[in-house]
Image 1: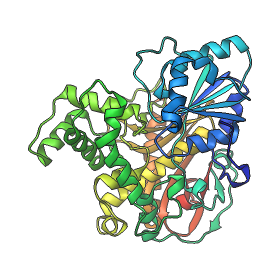
Image 2: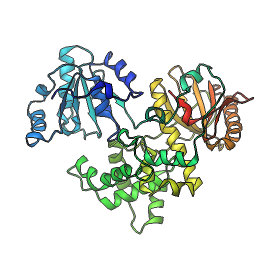
Image 3: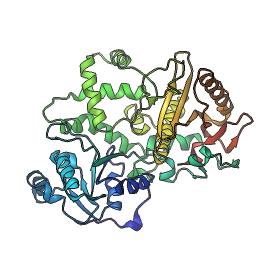
Image 4: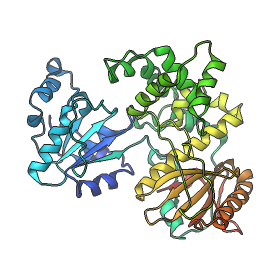
Length: 429
């Protein structure tokens, strides 16, 4: 099938530059991420031909062709998109061989919304196939951030204070519940959460069964685990705590092995985008906690599981704060990726915490505190200074950047202690 995308209708994504760069370096790319985040659309933008494995035409003849003659479906103008490759796992090894044989860069773009079991995959693809994680849209990509302030510029100490248009609490609640799926951006406040609700219902009801056809997943157990994760969004809750949470909220219990089995399956479906723990220095004397901060790929997923509407969230500001933190950290992970950097969080055994840490490829790091309103920003800045100083006193490196990101307010400025105070609706990569 030829490429059908009209480039003039394409809404640019931050990951575009990363795809272009890696097409020059690797023979093939694999664009991975949750369903409906725009993988196929973005890959089509960069491709010159395409083959859709899941096309139902001709009684799914495309899938049969991929299974019987995988090398044939790779033939076409390059870069050539192979969409939903995981439906025929043997395509992975065919791509690896195809790339080796051609010796050329930028030959194939694979997309997938789940990772197949290793059965049928013989080679890792290391050095031939570069995997790139794609997520739902950040506020800048969806047009809900002005982008007047660049994270990259902040890291280079390029900044001017600004008065900005204020975002209301109700608007923030809507943006969280709506999520960042490209097809949902223009949805009304009344209907904004429906896509995420449908997504999460299908995960338990249909998607798990399609992921591993030889494993008998239980829909009720899947829902219990997902709801517990939603209640613990943006926290470092342990697996043991999730098990206790399930028992407290339902008559049914789940074993450790069962929980692990379901978490692994959900992870293979790219439902999660957890923050790994950050260690400031190999010479630091601080003992750092090694627990990931739990995140769904989009906070709207957690809202859907908890049946949170914008109005409900505004009546529960504690929950609102956790979901807002998740929104900010979703965006920061996308902006960091564009800078060849990575998002972490920090906790030590002295009770110190930093909501978000971005580690740059040169070893420098940036510290972020997240607050729902501007009225709490200076409090967040004071805590950030205290924790960062403790890191330095214990042998760690001084952060390149200290920043408080908030939701409701109309100012972007650098305070007298050198901490940037920035609304999320003004930020971009």
